[in-house]
Length: 193
Image (cartoon, rainbow, N blue to C red; front, side, top):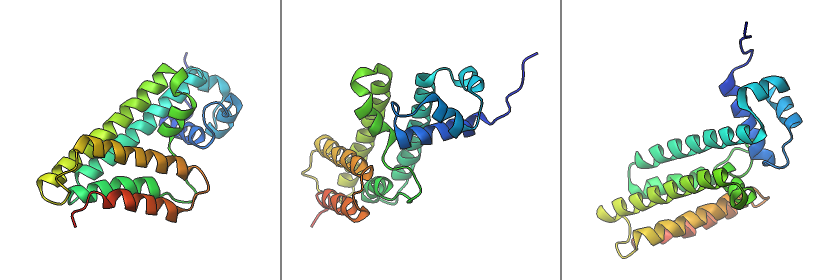
């Protein structure tokens, strides 16, 4: 007779995701995961598979949280410009107790070129964010709040690159004020005089 799980799978996956965000893939050992998730090693393997499979599930969880939460909030903002500002605030407004950085960016840098699945997941998320920014720029141009002369695709790519830089800097000891200044300069290029 099979034993029932003695843990909440979603809750322990969330714990694994946060540990990977804090330490990265390579630095996180199976023992770290067992201790942090609060489950037995056998349960970890039976439920999630090996470390790579657990990491991919953690990355998918993070990706869905970021893509869904950010996309919906930005699209539902009172204006296109406010939607773009909201995206930038999401990258700069972290509580001090939260792990620093972004699991997608960290994964792209750490694993991207040598792990096809990780590269595909990070690329999907990056493309989705660029498309969101492009849509918001076009919406803002149509309603007169964003400069019409800007190429929406090139501007979305530039804003996304700035967001990537902010996410990397967020992993360091860079002060929040610096991140806010970078965001402010990027956003000022969109606004009509």
